[in-house]
Amino acid sequence: MPLNLLHMRNFREYRPKDAPRNDMFLCDEEGRDWYEWRNRLKPSTMKILYAPNGDVVCIVRKLEEAILMNPLDLSLVELPYDPKYFVKDKCWAFLNGKLVPAEYQK
Image (cartoon, rainbow, N blue to C red; front, top):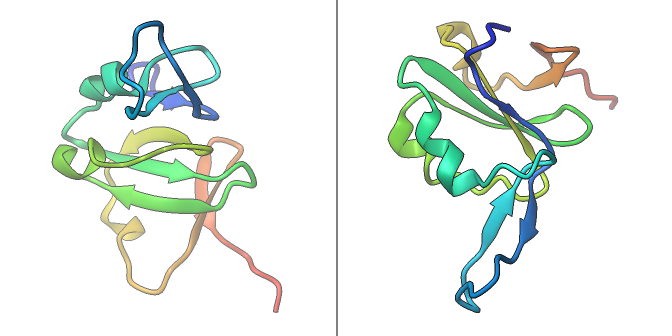
């Protein structure tokens, strides 16, 4: 993965001092605030939310869609855009730094 693409792991809720009571604040395991860092996402990439087990929850391309995501209890990775990942009825997993077809047991 190119070094300039974001990878933010394990978002959790936190409460800054003097924060409004009903607002939600999220940071990743490195303490980076989602609402500050989401502005660094690039318009030419895929933005992928995935669960702790690697299951992909959401893939978007547009920044307008990405800034609306709520990554609570998830991780986010940015990858170069590839249209093959935007196929209906196809499930993906993010494992070992790569998007792979998800394999579910019946």
